[in-house]
Image 1: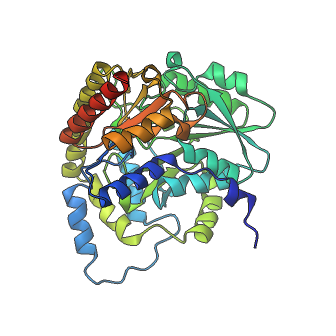
Image 2 (image 1 turned 30 degrees about the vertical axis):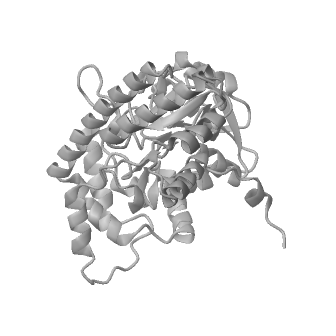
Image 3 (image 1 turned 90 degrees about the vertical axis):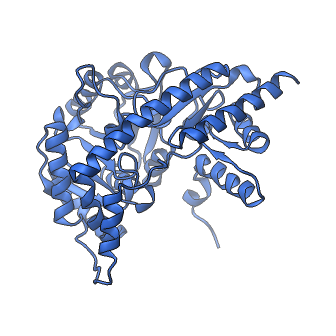
Length: 393
């Protein structure tokens, strides 16, 4: 029997591969510091956990509408109004099984075979696989520290071709933790809009972004481009990774097609997760989520100081999410070998740049500081010992 080309050619998600190896080491009795996966250690707010316990009381939990329960779509719309001052019609919000499902549905609805989609290099690896699954061609646009490893309007314009159908961006981004300046993001979207191309903006880390100089929250792109496609999730800001619940905001013409695709691909997102997630939008849960965001900023400072001390420069300081993308060139190892040896010798799990593109594949490594301060301190101490051992050889 023959496998499809798609199944044979798809790249692994290397962050998960290193996590799997870390689990094997733990099973063998080693204590591993896991800095490889973007998974907040704080979990869902207590009110959400309590809401889930209440939901799981034996009541029937039938399928929800394909686009999600009206109550959770309305709650998200209120959140946009209160946090970002943007009016979003709940009818344009689709609830999905995590942001990954939202991305899959959006790509299925917008990308035809042969279409080109512009993507920053480095960028989240699964986006490439989704685009290629539907026959699209990823055009990796190299970025530099000068652009904070993000797309700019000039770079998008230079990479544009007659086959460009969409620009996919993330702000803040994985793996760098950097965001696109608001004016630049608006300029990119305006350029794409005037050329009749889709603007797909991943905002799953938006609410973890550092406030603007005046203290206000970084705005959603919907404030400037109401017809952009926006992806978001309960995983990061609310700490609900394993709950697999996300959403997308769609332009009106995509709502019905995405609904039909969702019916066929997934039926619906988890009913109890949707019901419990309503508790995310209580004042108590939102205040706690903001407190956790501030703690991540403090963790970031520990990581940046520690990596600088070890001679592992973070080329561009992050201003959102919970990642530091650092250069290992001075160690004499490429990124893959550095991560392999750090895991096997120091029992510290990291993610090599190969996951995120080609421009920094061999020079850079991603560290997630979504773990406790104690784990960060331990991980940095172990990396220091590991690097000292390299220098003494």
